[in-house]
Image 1 (cartoon, rainbow, N blue to C red):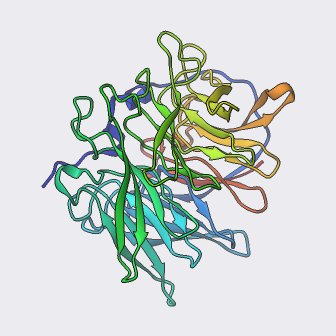
Image 2 (image 1 turned 90 degrees about the vertical axis):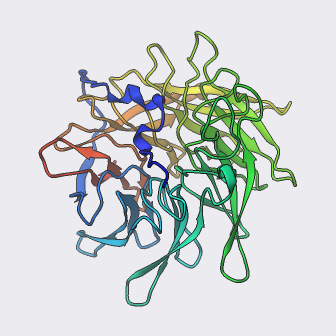
Length: 416
């Protein structure tokens, strides 16, 4: 049996996040905040780390510990928690990425660990008429020699119009002196007529010494209208501090690096991106980098714009300064008005994390406002992003609570 790896200890880039950040901050945007569920680390899991998703009825779905859960929105304003599935190891373990629905209401996701080789899975949850859900493993990673098919998926999945699934694994693929466990892959899962799924590796990172094409993808992917894939790597690139990459949807799935973060002695553009990118209607890309920005470097929100010559230009929308947030780990989202929302793991008025908003201003500028500051009473440390319902309410999770509270993270609602 392979030695189990912890998602929260897989790389030295996360070590800086153990620092305590207690700083003053005066005021933030008014909002209504309430806790919908407190995790007890029992059957309901605990330590949620991924984005939630919301269905057309306003119900929430997510992962915590070894569980996939639902929070059902009731007519009286209350919420009912239920566990849809608890992983046992053989069928997966540690689902840390976000979930995705298909058109029939089935849920799909990935687990960091577990499966046939203990190196992670892609799974499906099918709703039954009696309200239960049936789980099936679509693929177990490291099913071939030396894990060239990928190992340990962290990010969520995305569907294309034909019903194929795409994702990344943080390890596996090509072995190099840079990454002895493999530098990660981009994969595709295609449904077959007999109900099984076939995996195909579209790209293996670190083709050359020092991985100029990227290394260690920890986030899910995004698709454009032409079927091209976009993503980030937390390491590699021209300067070793991560990339934004594109895979062209041609026969060979050609990879190109759109941006390499952190030139020497100047990480003002950001460093170590950990999150999925989002696209606007014009084809611009938006994301966050967990480090870098204005010295000493608490992370940035950034935009990449395609140029007429085929290159891409990066601009920083906001550089976090600890008082307004620190270390953004989560995906951004747009609201219908074009505002961006996200979270930071630390920083803010008590150092326990922030939900923030970026609004487009004049001349291409963006205006920052804090929607909510976590104060550690008891909840703190949002690792996942936020999701919007049709009424404009924001929902998300915190990964932990203050010690001694019997609480292991929460699901929250914010009415901006």
